[in-house]
Amino acid sequence: MTSWITICDTCKRDDWSAETHGRPHGEDLAERIEARASDAGVRTRRVSCLMGCTHGCNVAVQGNDKLAYTLGRFTPDDDAAQAIVDYAVLHAQSETGQVPYRTWPQGVKGHFITRHPPLPGDED
Image (cartoon, rainbow, N blue to C red):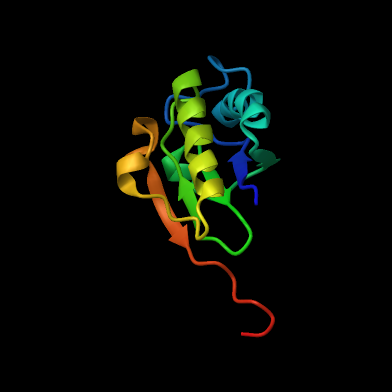
């Protein structure tokens, strides 16, 4: 079962200004994640706002019947994009979505904001 990376493409970090940036930081991060995700077997989608504005450059890692995570405070660069994709691959490989801390890519440590349990099934 695959995992999805939902990327906020409207995120702006604290240093964003119309004078110095032609587009939101989220678009920069989205392009970098998308370039890496398809080869890794992870799906992506963009949304306009995950409502984590104080955390700038937010993503959610989700999968059916799995724990879901929101991560933020990323710099929109290649290292962050690769760490996010690497974590999503581990999430996809996990039956529950829980990934042991010792296997987390260094680039996602300190970036977790929320964890959501899977939605209950229709029979629950």
